[in-house]
Length: 378
Length: 111
Image (tube, rainbow over all chains, first blue to last red; front, side, top):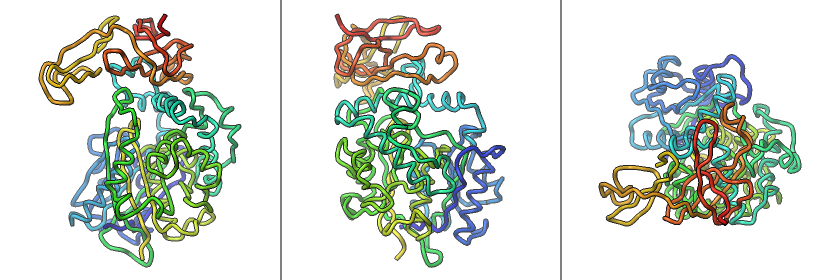
């Protein structure tokens, strides 16, 4: 077991003039202050990658910049799954006795550090360079193909997917750091600009600047905290052309490896933090993880099931869809929010009971999966 | 493998698996020297989308265009362009069309 002893999260959105290292530093300083630790206490460092600062050695580049001399450093690259994979690695490191306090940090000026075309183009390169990219796909197009099949097989509709965007926005309205804070309706989603049918712009997360950090420690610090009680991964394919028919089967595998269905049952979960790069991503993951029936994620959202006062509050900070998505830091915001919920610090978004949480991230096109199980300190 | 205006695929002489992305070994059993076949062009639409927002200004000038995942009769799946009127489940036929400066595979409803 390991403890999330400190968290840091910048606002997401347009943060002019801030570099990758600025945003990482801000989040890291906030996480250290939150944990009550000094730089010298950090003996492990895990970073991800930044599309605006491609570097062979981001972890040690950051260590030098921020002023760390860790005994262990590591850069992780797993697309959207990177954030939780970094946390899982930190968890394993402290369990193995390699490090005592691991700083897990990400940040990127993904919005203002490049043109939007450059961002879209860079991301589309996760497609196959010979068999896919020359045809003109984008990340939304890969997920739109998945969405077309999902709607065909389940009978779910664009309206039901839109419910998930509305839900994320409703939550973001209560977070001052969220990129988008004006309420939207399903009609707004359905009338928004088409991107790749059936996905429209409000089905897609934005490109954001931002940073997030957590400290993963071997022991508890202070009165409150949250601990990681399980972690698991699964990697089933890279490209959508080579994916299995049950494309997100890795989600269930990762969650089972983390302990879901064994020492923890789905019915015991009280909070969920699920990757939501697109409405369809969130729907498919919720259903694959057993948090909603097949084709029924949108309907559950419409019924209030995932509301702050609902049976299973979901992404109460607004998720990638409305808090924003700055790359590796995007999913880490889900973890920061979970830790704040478990430590009673979520302000107007505070849920009544966050006594057991499932976190899940995916990278590629539902290709790489990481699940974490968290519970508050007792 | 796409060579000129044909869609190629591979199959393994040892385990009989079929796949699209070219390699010099079988990704299932590891056997060397898989055989390369030429797709005859008959397939069925597995998934389809219309791309309105393209990845680059050059491709934006060609938008909207449709992308599909197609299950070909030989037993492999590949991404292609698709005609406006195809839907999931449709039997389709492959041809090559001009897309900007490239020739790309495109599927239309089988006659």
